[in-house]
Length: 193
Image 1: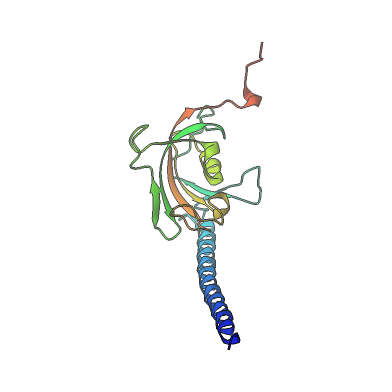
Image 2: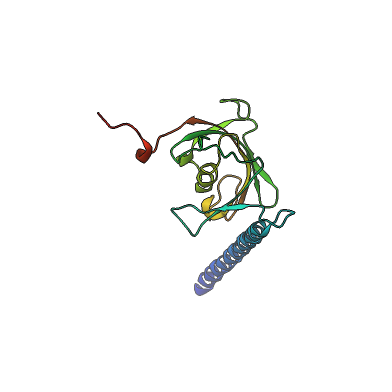
């Protein structure tokens, strides 16, 4: 008789483990489906063409990781002025932006920020996701661009606030100004004397 309650407890625990595994399995399937949908969309964006057959996006490959990239489409004519300011990795920039997931769901925007000017967000590039540093680091002050950041240069395989794991990000970014421009050591004219 004493074995019956013990057997019920063991079978009850096995049942809980099975149910827990089933829930984990469903969650894993949902994550894999989301990742695959994001990867499919990213491939479609890479293949996107202008009316004349040229690529819609330019691919920016960071020197520090030649296996990764960011896609960028400039909405303005890029200046050929060699003195046009482009931020360095250590620069603090003022931008306006809108963020959406691959499926068009809006996640974030600088619209309601009014500390540094209407809709202006200020940040040092080193404090942002790597994809932003790559994209904004290839913009001149005044540029407006659509930027696709693959999840590897975004929030990766973890969820961050309203952004699920494996999310490729679509930004519209305008580089308003470079608030603090850091000189790179190799271009500094300071001799230290």
